[in-house]
Image (cartoon, rainbow, N blue to C red; front, side):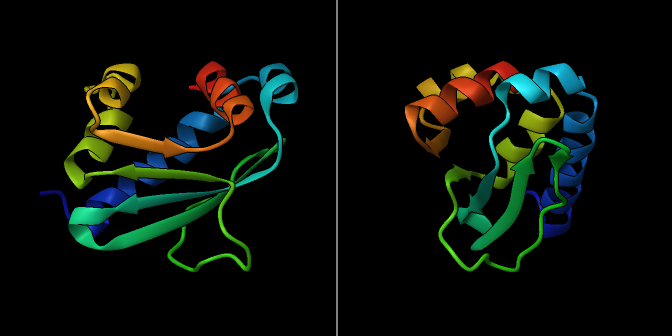
Length: 113
């Protein structure tokens, strides 16, 4: 099981990877959304915000309103996903990752990841 710090580092790496997405792609596919990442085996939830300028660093401070996009993933799977060792589509189909979001948000995220 990965630690909270390893998950925090993986999310920081995800933020950096998202910064590499071209401005044109972000302009086409990004709508401002709040994001939560629940890691049940560690009993922790990280929160972030997606917007046209990028993805804000994740914190453990909950936003005022519920997140628009809710991700649930185990700690080891989170690290593996960000490191490119776990395919998101396979993880979703296998039940290792759950995403609670509108259909439109899912399509947008798919284009960005």
